[in-house]
Amino acid sequence: MIPPADMMLFVAVVREESFTRAARQLGITKQTVSERIGNLEARLGVRLLERTTRRLRVTGAGATYYERCSAIAAQIDEANSEVQHRQAEPTGLLRVSSPVLYGRRYLTPVVSRYLARHPQARVELVLADRRVHLIEEGLDVAIHIGPLDDSSLVARKLGESPFHFVASPRFLSKYGMPSARDLRSARCIGFSAFETWEAEGVKSRIDPVLTVNDLELACDAAIDGVGIARVPAILCRDAVREGRLKILFGPRPAMSRAIHAVYPSRLNLPAKVRLFVDAMATLAEPTVPPHKGPRRKRS
Image 1 (cartoon, rainbow, N blue to C red):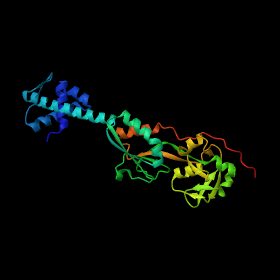
Image 2 (image 1 turned 30 degrees about the horizontal axis):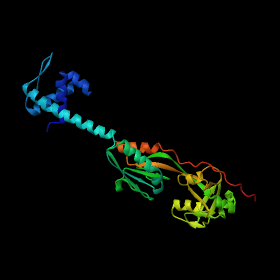
Image 3 (image 1 turned 120 degrees about the vertical axis):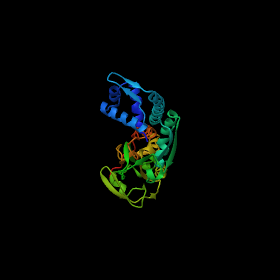
Image 4 (image 1 turned 90 degrees about the horizontal axis):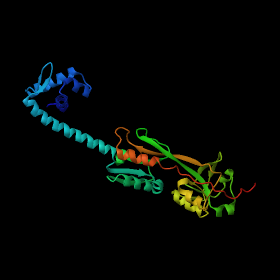
């Protein structure tokens, strides 16, 4: 079989009317060009070029062969351009996984802008509060909150998700503004029967009056005055802004978890992944405006 690269080399030689100029264009030596053209003629069993010390002339067979090869070269250039364009402009389905809360609160506007800007793209958004397996599940991107544990994947940090201790004005009016040391005996809303919270450098093993398995439930219960909750800023910021919740122990977050976009590889990263992750990175970090509460009771 004739190597396609040699056919393209022959086209370059004819167009440039010179071994030297073709070699310079392709970044190879004149000797290499001469040897490959000689091998091409030997395989075809026909003379393609007449060489003299002053000029290069295409034979009749060479002219016919050139027409065929130049048409193939044009098709190759067109194919390359099409692939490069597809790499520059997102096309096809993008499958994205995200934790439920983050997906509901943040991803909808990102997806809307992405689809408006790139009409050839489609998105499938999978919301799941579990550790996903990108390759096994056929996902392109996963939003991950918290520590990363798979070093084989590429991770781009998008920001931080701060958490705050919050309570309702009704709760604080009844029980007073707690100190960090009061958490141990305070009415708390937790995620397990016994867990450790840290506030102002003080660690407290809490015994929740209410245990839930959903952050939104914890926030709603705190708004209803059930107790103190530790919830992400993304969830409680509206309630804080509206005065339905107050941040405890100052404006500094109780803790913070890193937000990453995770994808399989940087090598030949598809435009649909690159541009979607770029759009995610433009999001502002979740914040909650400080809201003053009643003074703490003196002990």
